[in-house]
Length: 397
Image 1 (tube, rainbow, N blue to C red):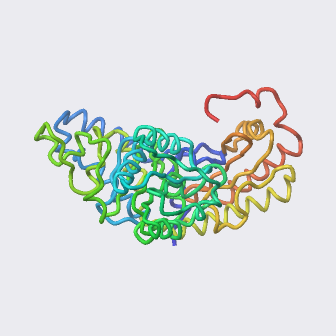
Image 2 (spheres, rainbow, N blue to C red; image 1 turned 45 degrees about the vertical axis):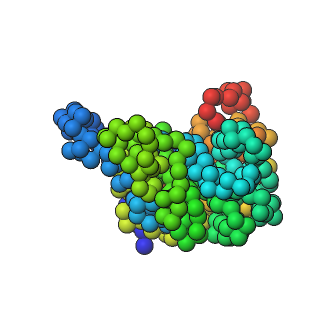
Image 3 (cartoon, helix red, strand yellow; image 1 turned 30 degrees about the vertical axis):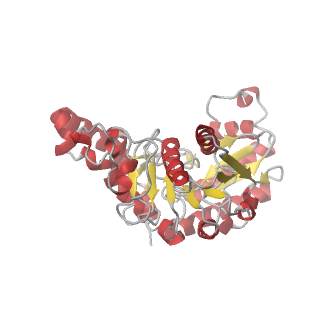
């Protein structure tokens, strides 16, 4: 069994704070600062450019990728890191549609993160020739899969409600229709058990700054199923995705496997923070994470339902149908969340009316759940949110 008391001690969280926003930005692992400082002083400072060889900087994307692979049910050598989630999604989607040239439809759902839909629409506009993005309600996805489909592109866990798609079933259905799949794991990796290989997923992407705790702007990752890696051609043929970057060939030759999905220079400072964050996961089992997450979120839902009748649950009531977050709806959701934050309970708000709370067992326990429930009940019962300063919208919600 995972010792969550031990993992909690590995994070630097201000005393008295109930941090329920790891689904947006994970907290600072205590070891990350020293790891980044050591990289800057002992590697960058002392080695300068020789650090690419002596400190293993060039191998850092694959090294981190293999450690992430264990958490998402992927084999070693099938995941690499770097760039942003949007860039990795573009690469995966472009590679997938190129492998189905006779089809012209990308299917997604209205619960997908807007950036994913922007990227898909942009790609369709660039391709022209009748390409289109079809967007349906999340519950209508299965019924919309047919033989016109080139790619099924979904975020496994809905960023607003936490609704969980059945990856294995939808992947099998897409394959039965002759389509490929691209899964966004932004709210899955480190939050719920994922089995990319077992589900037969073709491509997957995700970020590391949420449940994996790599810090703001942390590098994204991309997975390509090993049996497709030799045929998946990157739409962004970057220098470091070349088979021999330091041959400086005028013509592009893709590297073997998922390494071809590397684009530009690896973000070594961020990768150092990510490696420190991934150390926390040593010995942690995703099954334990899931069981504890359900225990925490069920307690929170029950408490809110009993004491906050004006809040409407937006997440599925069945814990098996949601990820590791719980959302409630209220017309004054933004002001309510600001009142909570002012009182030491940090969640976040998603337009138009969602209060969102993330449950990361690595550092959240029943004490924080009770604190959040008590504070939310007080804010609602006393109308403490009804102040002008809580309605003033900040740039980031």
